[in-house]
Length: 433
Image 1 (cartoon, rainbow, N blue to C red):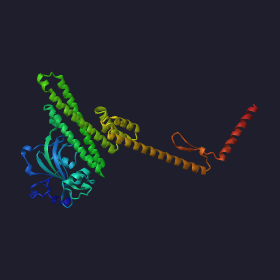
Image 2 (image 1 turned 90 degrees about the vertical axis):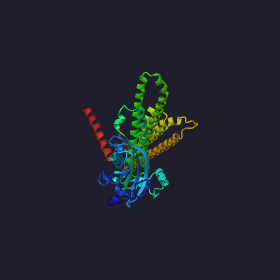
Image 3 (image 1 turned 180 degrees about the vertical axis):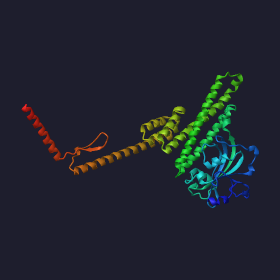
Image 4 (image 1 turned 45 degrees about the vertical axis):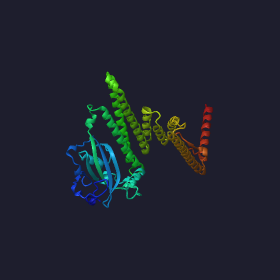
C-alpha cells in the first residue's frame, strides 16, 4: 500500500466526497512517507498562528478514516472538543505529532499515517456503541465487520485545532483564579472522556487489550491527580480570602461567590471520585487486584464513606484476589446503605451474589485440590503395599515431603541380634567385675 499512498482518494470534507483540487495541498513529511501532514489553505490566517509546544493543552475536533487498499476512506470515528497535553502520550503518536506541527488554531489539517503510528497490527475493534452510532450515520459499508480500523491499515485524521492554552499561562497567578479552576474542570472532563474512549475499545479488543486498558488507566489516574491538585489550590485560595478583612461590599457578594465555589468544588470532587473508580476498574481488568483495592480505599477513606462503586469494586477485586474477609466487609457496608427503597442497592445485591459464587468456586477448587493430593498419597501407598511396605511406615515430614522408613525382615533380624549381643556383653562385663 505504501506505493499507492499518493493516489489515495482525497477526502477533505466530512461528507466523504472527493476533492477536485487535491493537488493544491502540499504534504509535509514528518516521518517520511509513513507520517505526513498537510494544511488546508482555505483555513489559513496569519492572526491564528500559534507555536504549539510540549506541555501545551490543545483543544481540537477530529475525524478518523481508515484507508483501504482500494484507495477508499471509511469513517470510523468523529470526536469534538478533545483536549490533550502535548507530549503526554494521551493519544496515538500520529495524532499527537500532527497536532504538534500544525502551529495554529482554527486551521484544518490532514494527517496520514502508517499503522505503526496508529493502531498497528491489532487494529481497532468495533464496540457496540460505536457500531450503532456509525451505522445510523450510514458511513460503515460493511456493518458486519469486526473492525473499525483493520489491522495494519493506514489512517487519516482530519483535525481542527480550536484553542491552545500555554502551560506558562496556566501556572501563573496573575490571571483570574476562578476562570483557571473552571478550565481545569473542563480539561479533566475531557480527559475522562478520552479515557472512556480507550476503555470502550479495550473491552471490544481481542489484541492489544493491555495497552488500551493501560492508556485508559493513565488518563483516569492523571485526571484524578489533576483534580486533586485543583481542589488543593482552591482550599488554599479560600483560606487566603478568609484571612482578609471583608468589606461590606465583599460581604454583599460573598454568597454568590460561595455558590460558584461550592458548585465548582462539587464537580471537581465528583470528577475525582469518578476517575478513581474508573482507575480501579482498569486495575481489575489488568489483574492488579491489590492496586484496585487501594484506589477504592482512597475513595472511601478520603471522599465518600458510602460510595457504592468504590465498595463494590473493592469487593470484586478482593474476591478475585481470594481475600474473602475483605470482600465480605465491603459488601456488608454496601448492603447497609439506605437508598430510599427499603431494599439494598442493586449493585450491592449483585456483588453479594458474585461474592457467594466466587467463594463457592474457591472452596470447590480447594476440595478438588485436596482430593487430588489424597489420590496421589493413596497411589504412593498402593505402590508401597505392593513392595511389601506397610502404610504406617510412610510419614510426612514438617515441610510436606514424603520420606520412608523401610524395615525389611533382614534389617529387623540384624537389629535384634545386635541389641542382644550388646546386652549380653554388658551383663558379662558387670559380672566379671
